[in-house]
Image (cartoon, rainbow, N blue to C red; front, side, top):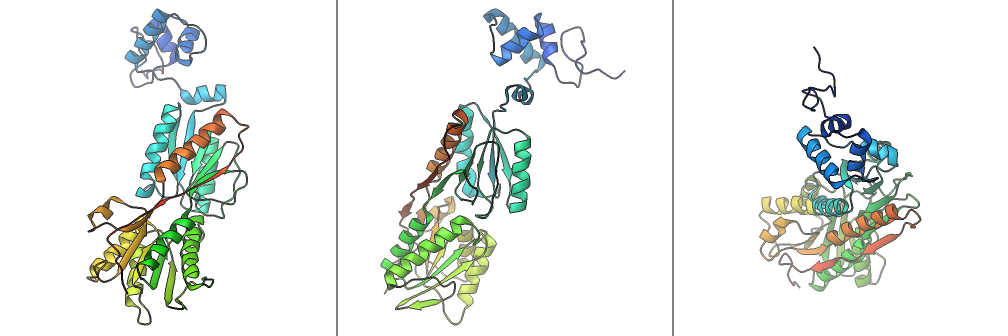
Length: 357
C-alpha cells in the first residue's frame, strides 16, 4: 500500500518517506493545530510548558515550518536576493559573506543568483520577484540595464540607468586618477591600461580617472583609445572583458607591438591582473626591473609578489555593509527614498613599480 503523506503511524510520526506536517506535530503533542501554529509564528499566547512540548515533538518528527506559505499569508518572505554577474568571481566573495551575515542577523535568508548578461539579468530578476523576495542587492550586468521592481533594490559596485534605485559604489574615477598620478610621479611616461567591458559604469570611471591624470600632467584633454603622444607622455587603453584570458592576451599584444611598448601596465581588475602576471612570467619579464605593474583591488596572491603590487583598493567591506543597511532601511520603512552612496578607496604602494628616468 502506498503511504499517504501525513498518515498517522500510531506514534505521532508521519509516514516513512514523507515530510511531517503541522497536524502531525499537533496530534503527537496533544494540542490543537492553532496552538501548534502559534508556537512557531509567535502570534498569540502559548504556555511555556506547552510550547516546549510542541517544539520537542517537532524536533523528534523533523518538522520545519513552511516559511514560503507563511510569507504568502503575511505578504513577506524574509528572503533577500543577491544577484552577481559571476558566481566564480572571487572579487565578490567577501561582499557576499558580509551581506549574508548582516541579513541573517536581521532575520532574512539570502538567495544568491548569477546574471552575466542583460538578457539573463531580466529573466533572473523577474524570477526572483515571482518568488516574492522582499528585496534585491544587485550588481548590474550593464550600465544600460533598465528595470523596475515592486520591491526595494540596491545596486552594488556598478550603476545602471534604472530610475529610482539606490546604489553603493566606489569612486573608481578618483582611485584610478590617484593610481595613475602615482605612476607618473615615479617617472613612468608610457602607460597602458587593460580594462573590461566599456558598457559597464566601473570601466567608464576607471578609464576616465586614468585619462584625467594623464591630461592633467600634459595640460591637455586625453581621450584617445590608442597610443597617444602629448609632450613626453604616451598611453594606450585596451578594453575587453574582466577575465584572466583577456588580461593575458592584451598583455601579450602590448609586449609584441613593434611601434610602442609600455613602461608600466595597469590592470583594471584582479582577474585581468592574473592574466597580465602570467604573460609577464611566460616572457621572463620581471616587475619592477623590466616593467612596472599596477592593479585594482588586491587578491591574496599579490602578497606572494616581492614587495606586493601597487594597488588601488576599493572599500569592499564597507560597500557591502552600506548596501545591506540601505536595503534593510527601505524594508523597515518603505517611505525611505533611494539614495546613491559613493565611497572612497585607498592607494596601497607596492614593490611592483620603481622610480625611473
